[in-house]
Image 1 (cartoon, rainbow over the protein chains, first blue to last red):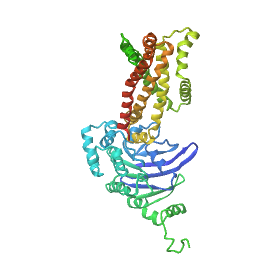
Image 2 (cartoon, rainbow over the protein chains, first blue to last red; image 1 turned 60 degrees about the horizontal axis):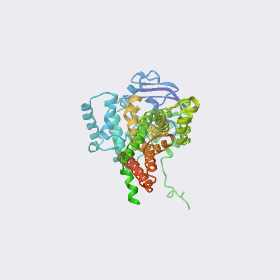
Image 3 (cartoon, each protein chain N blue to C red; image 1 turned 180 degrees about the vertical axis):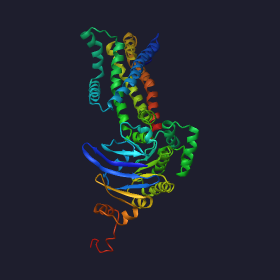
Image 4 (cartoon, each protein chain N blue to C red; image 1 turned 90 degrees about the horizontal axis):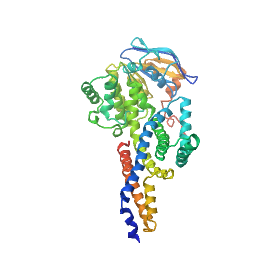
Length: 252
Length: 225
């Protein structure tokens, strides 16, 4: 489905991604984890051409996407993307936000897409908000609309870039539940997240990236319980807490 | 005394002349504003380009126009051009040129500010949906920019209406000049006329500008958030 080979990307001479190679099979959920600034989000943006790559190759459904010859608008219609900052268009209501892509980019008819949009809104539990404006929604609701907005394009793969990082804790769940459901239904997904519990539950495969390189990849049960590299161990340790008091390590 | 003063406003065609003067002032500002809107939008878009030459040229133009008092610009256009190149512009034409240049600079800066105030992610989200860059601007960036821009542009036009009172000094007969003429003509017959005439001029400016700035406030509230 998606294949990435020896991808390299730099900003102003500084290499942010180096020698990245991996592939995502149809229906597979791959979760990218790693410290902040390791290049995960940049990698996602390279996949749909929002960042230009220096060298290497990305292929989607067997078609190689090289920056200059590729018709990115057409490719991007097959790649749904949801961002951290749930960027709904503030001057449009929920329905208009969802309809913009299919009507203006894919030239689908309003009637057909509206029915689709209502189905998707029902699915993310927000049909009653279809005439609401983004400013009237909570963060979690906005993010669910953003997911519906990406799904209506009928993408072959979905990219999620830290979609819960900007949400209040109590709203994280509703968004992750939608994503878990998608995973169960067999959507191909490439996810960047810091929610390790979620990664464990949703992923078919974890890829650990540090300093722009793939350090380790494997099944979630292996990665989380038995990481092979020191860098992965150190990273995972940041997410676990020990009760220092009970161990007698607390301040005396 | 007082009642004699107020009478000058209604003598002969004085009232109508004042209104005509106001219309001259408004015509200069509305025409200049219309030109400024078009040219300023282009200038503002140009200023957001990454091309260093375009950027520098726009910046120099903007600073030059904004640093110069409008009166100096008016004198430059009206007297300076005649002296230097023998081009004789009428006061009205000079005013139109100067106010358009000034309005373009101010408008350009507003447009630039508004365009860069739209979060970059709005643009990325549009692209990620598979819209072409042009459609992203058409459906996402421009509509949001317009909402932020229109109240600012309306405020600019009230500033322009007020500033047109300077054109008296290059011989354009607008509302203030008509007022002065009326006062001069009645200097002995109605010595307190000045207060009434200037009062009437004040009122006329108020009537012209108040609805405009109310409209700006209304739109600002409506589109907030």
